[in-house]
Image (spheres, rainbow, N blue to C red):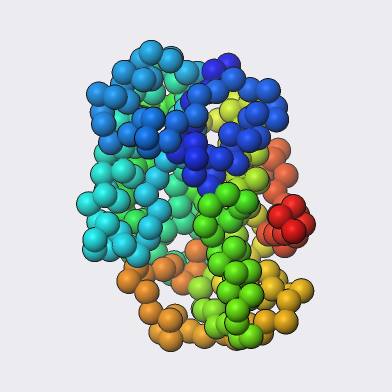
Length: 279
């Protein structure tokens, strides 16, 4: 099997690439400098030449707040046009495509868990672009895995865990929103699932994968900083306004992912392993 990874230098792409190295898998890893996914001709030339069996599409524009204004065009260009380019090229060479999406495709009004087939209703520009990317993947071929995830953290790149740890070095007290509920996701768990569905030939389609259990950002922050002297205080979203509207309740069901036989650790377990690995 030959694999191709887009966004190979990003938070998830780096984690996935390291995991593939450890497993001795053959792959090509490209970042934006090596393969600009918004350049359709370049994407087709690369993928036609390499003819990978599987493409892990990790490249994305993830600046949620700038996507509302200054980054709106780039958000759409990368997450929709770029994804369509990769999906169409994958279909032409018969490659399986693994596309990473987001809980932001939902509106956050569901008091229970969002099922894979629940109606989507994104409330910000990033969510709208990622949903359009999903639709581009579905239109290109039936050989795809769309994997929605949420609240991603990991060793490589910027994320909420690093932000909290760094702020704790210079602040005695931090305030974090306590009225947005979701599921944190360790990049290690997500990368494992990406490789798992391909290796085990799980049924093609849309999946949702985060770590198990749920929390608010405040509860997440408290767990991150529990061994520090920094106090974490809860605030509301109104007290901490952001450009992009966030889903208030975006817990996605893991039932379909778990039905494949994949064992999903809790976010507390995942966070603990992550913190020990970077300590």
